[in-house]
Image (tube, rainbow, N blue to C red; front, side, top):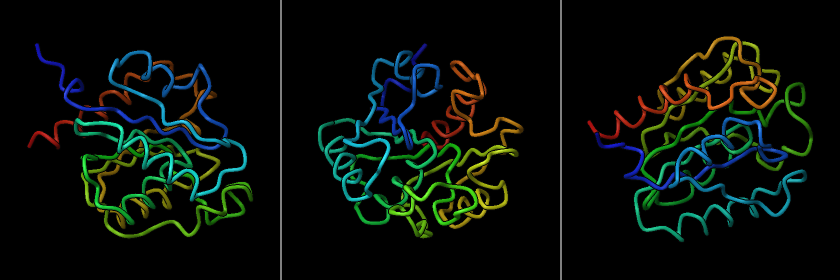
Amino acid sequence: MHDATNDYDLLVLPGLGNSGGEHWQSYWCLAFRNASRVLQNDWDDPKLDDWLKNLDAAVANGTRPAILICHSLSCSLAAHWLARKDPGRVVAAFLVAPSDVESPAHTPETTRDFAPMPRASLPVPSLVVASTNDEFVTLERAEDFARSWGADFCNAGELGHINAASRLGYWPQGLLMFGQLLARLKR
């Protein structure tokens, strides 16, 4: 049986502070041989221009179609990148727990360089996954982002920030959601 994920480069984009060893993104990097983490120079004091340059380099370094697998602050990174660039080999975006970079009540001051959140329709099929009890974004706000991006939306239930603290391991439900995005690409 053909594994559809093998047809793509999976560019894993962690958020503020990077994704530690118990984060689903780290498990996915181990599970998929074609997954690579896009590294940033400063995970704790992020600058949008620097993060954009590193994403540019990661996209430029590949030859196969690529899917952006984003968590938290990197959902904003992907939205900024896709709003400014021809997507080139990027064919989809999986956007998990987008942080509300415009809200001092929900996100730290260090994320303000990523505000305002781009609202243009994304040029590639996208899926936003959000939790009902995420401290960094309300469900309504995440749905609003998805709507403005023309992305599909999935309410993942009570999973907090959908990070290591959520204790998801390989996050099987997330893999199913990711599979839905892959199926959309095949249609």
